Picture 1 (tube, rainbow, N blue to C red):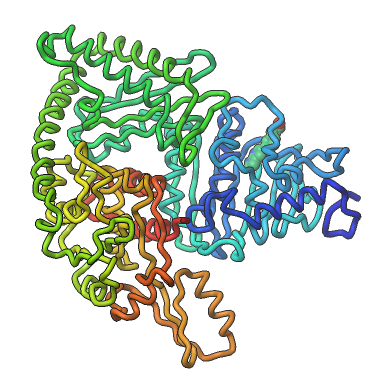
Picture 2: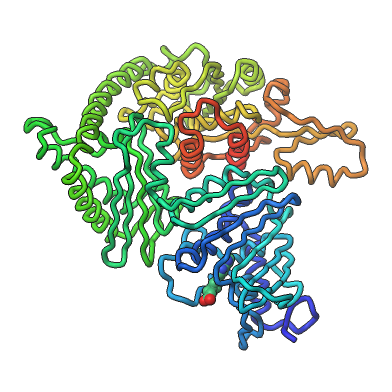
Length: 637
Ligand code: 0RA
């Protein structure tokens, strides 16, 4: 019999090492999965899915099924080769058990060609195992069906063959541990967005997402790959030419694939991937792409006389407007850098992408010259619009230059003029704004109530954004200008705090504000000045004592502690349900409140999900906003 923990055998040195490893993951989960909120929860699924994608990219798997079960567990099933089941004589346990219990043991013994797992997430299925109250592994391999069950990472039995099988593959079914995760509701939309993205990047792979409880499912399979991705992103836009331009090539073991198409909007939507990992901070592949695009368009424009000799070259910025592009590179040893490890650092990739894209574009435009004119005309208009925006910006700047004299009327400023200690609460709605004004400490807390609609920045150019009254009010209150004139040293408050209702509208406004800051004042986020207030979700009253709960986990804990008392639970839907005193106590008092700092990754995610899911749709998708609101609520400081 093999040495397993459950059967009372002696612990070997390697068993103890494994327990210590998994224990480390349980003690400091954020080190491994980023946080224990919604984001970390979804990370668990991606970790398992990444392994299945590796099988797909190696050519062994063409079907993945992700199932959300009614009890809150998730399973990820693939038809790959199956995790190896043979017993490793040295440690006397199956290879599968080693993979599921050893930290960082990706367990891939084969050539590490273009691997996804071990990339960004890279912590391995063992971390999923460690952070699950139970996990059930099924492997179909060698004509048999194998099973093993774990509890918090510890095997409850050895890997056993329980029947015959005429297929191969792996199923990992797990229950996220409620002792670890604050919330355990998987979001169909968040999973959908990432799984769809993967399906675009691995053409031919079918990925299904099934939500049993809500009787919903999606199935993604795109034989057109990233060309389909571009068409999808432009689905409710008006493209400037019929088909996306598609370029691919390989050099020095680096695979490069690019698809692009212009539309008549004003935003750029460029998504770049390295080994399927979304490099949201960009990197050498993006730099190479932009350089090649700019050079090729200018050169062809001059040859075709679309630019006159005396016209200056179109700049990289001119060519951004209305561009939808996907860049996908695959390489052997990707280096991920940057704050969130999502910037590709390999320096040789820049030149490789540049030359492949430049040559590809030149050849394409040579053959289809009529693709060029709309691109050039659009870029020239973009240049003119940027000049106009500059004037509009100057107007706002001039108005706000005399801060104090020309502050917006709605602003209830604080008495301190020291930005370091000053806070600005941007509050949704007049009634909540009123409570905040009464409840605040006016020496250092300023209140700016927002009422009107905030413009969807996705749809507008900077000059249009600047004509939106609410946005102008915010810019004036902050005092630091915008766009090219932005000056962080003039920021009047070092804490800018978004405070919105815990409902769909509040989430929508929060998402819009995040997208606005991300696009037009990213430095405020990068320097850690932007926060989201965390009003309590529940008030629990038991006799004379009251408790405020800020998450479902808080509520569960409170209910457990008060299990034999009579309790009254109030669920807060909006800030308006609290009086000024309660608002101060729960949400604004620095001694008590919970503030979540927004990092650039969160802002990027808000912006991206916004783009991928909503595009031009007028009505935001209720459910997505709700799910995403939770994600944003749970940013880890
Ligand atoms: C180790 C080695 C091999 C495959 C896998 C692990 C593997 C892991 C997971 C996790 C989910 N699905 C998976 N599928 C495969 C290579 C197998 C071989 O060489 O036959």
